Figure: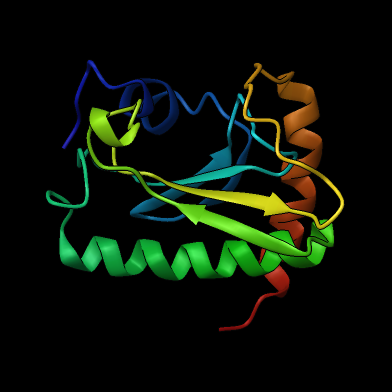
Length: 141
């Protein structure tokens, strides 16, 4: 399934315009281009599902295993004190892109989150993505 109006379908899944950390048959993960914190990753199904109500259960389970693997890699590579893992459903719940996605946001004890989001430089995102990709290869589930 592909939705031409969806930026994740059009730019990420179709054109590959992102700093990827993981590419599976059904699941993609990439650096958020307006990160809340350095290392902020988005995990999406390759096919279009708008929200948790629509996503195929097998794809959902596969995506959650990818979230676990990537979360462990982010924690190990970036030496985080913790992670926020979030997923929003519907505009009222602050879902901005209407393509199911999970946020993995690194957290640190002595650093406050800046919720003001600014677009990051793709080269800077790719530097972090390279480290996370290497970390994912080390994770055994």
